[in-house]
Length: 239
Image (tube, rainbow, N blue to C red; front, side, top):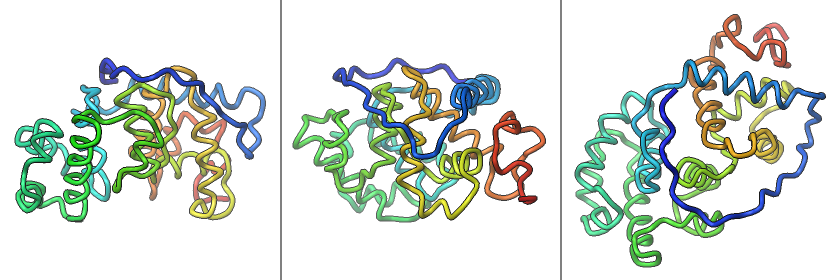
């Protein structure tokens, strides 16, 4: 498992977590947490953005990872940060140049949004991205997932995240019925309720890795899965 970087300082806040609508059997929550974190400690991916807690670096990685595979993002992540090492340098660059640097990742609205976020961060916050959820969501281009990722990975807060990998893992293990696209509110509740207190960083990184490498969209590795005793979908394809 990659070494967890020292987090940026954030304002203390009380964690307000409501019980998820999906009933969890006695001990199920703790077993899921323990199995996932144990798996991550042994098999977690060594990724460059896991070696920093700089909110700018975290934001760049999260925007790049939208719609793009990890192996394509890694070299461009390094190149982009070398050219634009902070919000200030990015904000001062012409947007056309930023889009050219972004090439060939595609989905070119992303560099435009990232450039816009940089300019707003510099003008409103002196080049320091805030950690407050509402302030983050006020940026055009930062949605609930990205805000949660920044709070979790840059500021070490127990903030929930919900991307395609997390949706797939939670739905298969705990729900196994209906269309997950229509159960987003429930899955957000579940994501937040499952975070072990003080371990949001590792838990969120772990569940994303687990969905990307074990509980994959097609042909998941069920025989190797540590969640078999807990999973409502196991064995996949036979229910």
